Image (cartoon, rainbow, N blue to C red; front, side, top):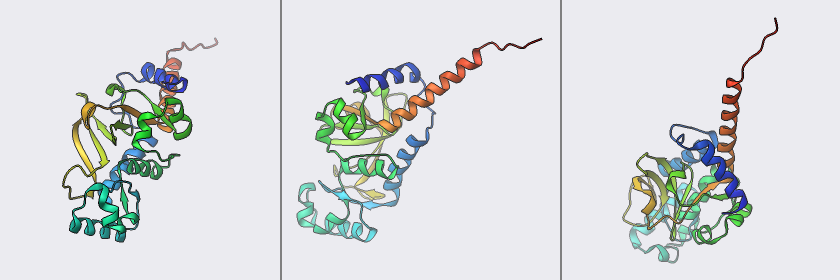
Length: 229
């Protein structure tokens, strides 16, 4: 973990321990809402390499073609060229969420998420590596596994959580098609062991500023007041 990561992690551990439940911060809340919006209001198929959220007509045409062809994830572009106009894989889904939430974001694959140094993740991709301890994870964070990435929507005290992701792991229908919500997932081993937890720097800074302000306010409340007589 690089110097920047250690700085934010130290702030997190000092100020945030035991207080992660019930706190709503605007940027983080926007990320979670955008993730759910793509699930609830778009019918987008998973295609390996899919990178575009096209218009609904193209999305439906892709879905219809895939229903007919029953192609595997890596053959879907060749079998259904219309899917180049509307489909998302797991890493492009999380990139789209950040973009729609107004966060500065540069696309990277799950392989890069796992293999780049913490310094490069922070400087080039605005992502803070906070390790693998699930106790540090918060809604809006990316949980990276071998070949897959999900967005944490909700976290429970028992270590489980709700995640939203673009997936082709099984036959899926309903809201989102390839974009799905998994409730009360075992986060540490959802798709094999979690390899990295990544937090957008804007969310890390928002959390840091909130708790520094909170601590400063508490300190001011404890200061004795003096009056002149």
